[in-house]
Length: 42
Image (tube, rainbow, N blue to C red):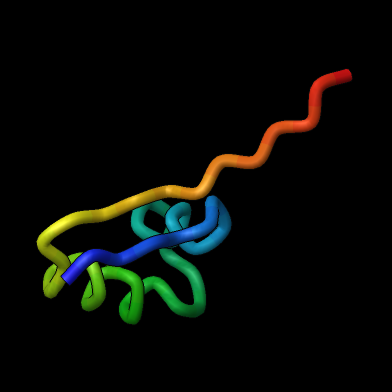
């Protein structure tokens, strides 16, 4: 299973807060992880 995260959800993998357990569970089941990156140039 491929799992996509935005940066706020992916941060929960490293910062213990509400939702961290859910993100870690998704990461365990995933065969691939992807992170969405959005950047606004100044």
